[in-house]
Each structure stands twice: as structure tokens, then as C-alpha cells.
Image (cartoon, rainbow over all chains, first blue to last red; front, top):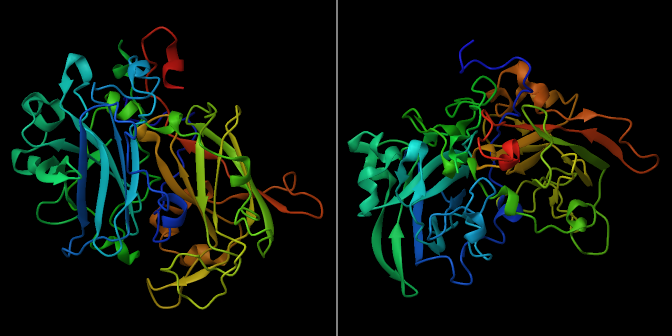
Length: 200
Length: 243
């Protein structure tokens, strides 16, 4: 059997279902939007943006989760052998809703460092992002890279994206917020400039 | 270290819903039209927040009293329990399980839910707990009611509880719904209908009389299977590196 065929004796995965419209009070009433409260994990930044649907309308009932490495490129996880060096207050996880009125989401975090890739490659600084919403029967998975980062040119994931779509994965410098460098990343669920989503 | 050689098995495409499912109207403008780009797993995907999310109090698992009003929620008291395992059957301990649901009358406390069913002031409809060493979670709650929605004429959601789990890695993240056995609304629900019927039983809790407590609460079992590792990490300690 090929490696891609399911192994018969495995237990079947539980299927995904939509988060629906009413998750807020359970999952985002207390948003996790300050990832580095002690300011120990790296260069502080703000990442913000919107989510739009195929009609160009703001998706004001979405949930965004981010997972990222610290400024040293280390994940707080046992599979990262360097996790002991991650500042203790930095989990690397954020969870926010898009605002009902403006459709905006924002997280205050740190610029991640470069992260080891497969086969000795190096991945450019990125946030791993999962998007949940009514109308999404399974969540979407994407990455936020940073426009102008020197390591982007050698990033193996970006290199695999058609050049005309690569810009959808880049957050752009967008002034300052509370004295911190701010980056904008807009998610487009469908249509022109549709964000690249990954089958991860 | 070489744990970036680890990866997780692919999502089960046959059992998971498509992003475009016309019977569920909200998918129409929200499903991406471009096919998802395959992503080989790196440290970014085989790590995840799950192991670090553990800020849970025991009372968070009792939805009949966690509104904090001092009074009990109204409705049919139920126990919902089960095991979180991966595809190999390996228990997933210390896994954060978050749930949310409407009340016994079919009303969410969410401001977006305005259908004319009563709000229960003693029911906030959310709970969370961690799995134990055996991967077992357990909630005490109220059986949720069915409720109308505007997807199609005379549309009603079957009674269900939303489940959110992280598991050991970013790619084991799962949000799903548990339904109740014997509900005639299953056949009419386009969200359940988004997955093939032969997989519906994976989303339906089993009534389990051994969980039911005499003169107290009915019991349901709902086991959850997360994606499993496709390769053993190659550093000393073996599979423990991803456990």
C-alpha cells in the first residue's frame, strides 16, 4: 500500500464541524491578545487586519488563532528541543474574534525569529494562523510572513507558492500602535486576492 | 535535534466536510475557491499551544452551576464524557476540552440569538476541562434544545454541543459538534449532511446507562479521535517527544 492510503487498523478521525455564529462567549470573551505580557520574548509588534468574504463584505463573526515562535525562533512545546529557553511568560498562542462593528482583529505580540524547516532549511519569521467562522465547516490554515524580511527569499514554503499569490501571505508595515511597529494582514476567504490556505 | 522529521497523518478527506457545501448557505461566499496548498509538516505544525493550555478550575466542567448565580440551570441534567485519543488509540492526557451550547429551550445567551425561547439566567452554556491520564474528559450539563435558523424554510438545528480541542500539535486542532442519538432532525440538517452518512456515528454521542446516575442525570459517551503522528520522532525518547 502507498503511504497515502489509510491504514485499516487506525481509529477514524472525528470529523470537523463549523464553529457556528455563537462561539464568542465560550472562546473569545476573554481574548488572548497580548502574547508577551512581560516583554521578554522579543521585539514587540502589533499584527492586525480584517477578514473578508467573496462578496467583499467584512466577516465580523470570525475567530483567529495564532501560534508562533518567540524572538529566538523557538516554540514553547516539547517537540522543540529549545523550548526551555523560551521566556516562561510566552506561550506563543493568541485567540481573538473579529470585532462586530469593524471586522478588525489585532494581537500584540513579538516578531518571531527564524524557525528550522525540513532537511536543514530555514523558515522566515512567520505566524501560523487558523481561521474559524460560521460557514467554514473546517477551519482554514495559513501563515503570516512579514514584507521585506530578509529571510523570505530563502523560505521553502513561500518558494512553493506561485509568485502572483505570494503577496497574500505578507503582512505590511502599517505605522505604529501604542508606540509599537504595526503590521497589517487582511484575510480574503474567496475571490480576487484570495489568501493562500494550506492543507497542513 | 531532528524532531522536525516528525509529521502527522493527513486529515481524513472522506470523513471531513468540504468547504463548499451549497446546502449550508453560509459556505457560499466563505469557502476558498483555490485548492489548499499542501504543506509538509515542520516544527511550526508539529508544535502547538495544547501542552501549555492548562488554566482550568474543576467547577468549569459543571455547566449546571458555573453561571455562579447560586441556582441550578433548568432542564434535563446530563453527563457527557468520553476519551480523547489519537488514531493509534493513544490517550491524549492534559488536553483542553472547551464546550459551548444553547440552553434546554434552544436559546444561546449570545446577543446574535434572538429567537423567542426563554433565556435561563442560571445557564451560561460554556464549560471546559482537561483530560486525565487516560484521556478522559467529563462534563455535567443540561441537554440542549433544538433551535431554528434561517438556512432554509423551517430549518432547525438538531440538539448539539460544540467541542473545541487542541491536542498535542497545531495540526491536531479540532472543533466539532456532538449530536444526540435518535434525533429526527439529523436527516434534515445540512451541517451534519456535509459529511457522508456512514461517518455520522462519529459525531453522535452514545447513550450509556453505565454513565447515567440514579435519580440524578442521564449519561452519554462521546469519544474523540485526533490525528496521530505519522512517524516516530528520531531523537532519544522516541514518541514521547510528541506526546
